[in-house]
Length: 313
Image (cartoon, rainbow, N blue to C red; front, side, top):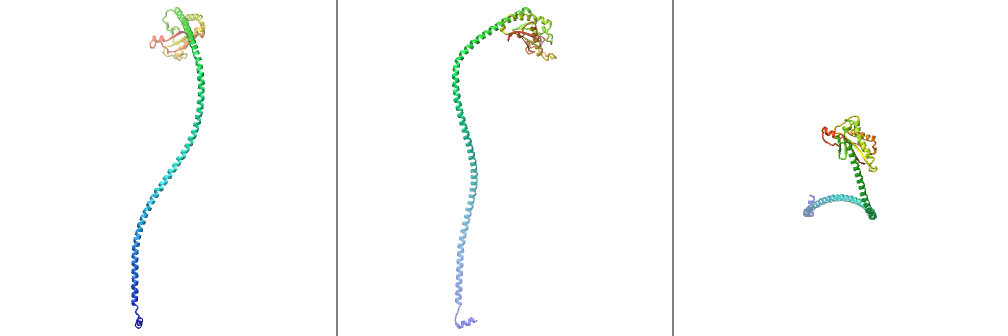
């Protein structure tokens, strides 16, 4: 009211100025709002652009991370491969060193072999020369050997013929002395006495009758022995044989012992009659040289025998 009174007295009105100021303030505020709105619009666009850029950058970062992971795995694989290659290289170097050492040893061995080959070649040349020289001598020696062999064969043939002549004479004399008897026969170059003529069954002792029958044989042989040359090397071989029926006694466990004992008994008789021991031989054949392979009594009788053979030692 006091203001009004002053207005009345002073005639000063401030309301229009206040309105103007308020209007201007409002305009400023509106302008600021407009600027804020425009700025907000531009800021929103910028933010949207930045968000898109951020998303694009995030994708790039993710791609780069994936690429980095791949590169890291690749680097790890390459590192592992490098380690394997390094080990292989080290092994290869070791093998190379070993091969180099072996090559050196081989070269040394080859050098030694070459030296040995050269030495052998020289020895072979010397041997060849010696062989050529020896071949000449060998030809002469072979001729000498051939001549000596022919002479030796001729001498042996002569001795064989001579012994055959004495054997023929001996057997001829025995035929005359013994006559034609069925229990004493000639088989090839042997005189064969049936065992029953000389021995009792299962015995190796000569009976008196056997000694009587063998005496002419010993006499003929003794007469012949005085005329056979000493260098002819003759021997009267006396062989004992049995049949295949087994024997088993305390004295003769098998036919081997029986056949041998009978041959020895005849040899002892011949020695008693004056035949030199070094011209006699005894052998036992058991049942293993049969004249007849049958199982009859006649076959058994033929196989039980004493054989006399005049031969060379």
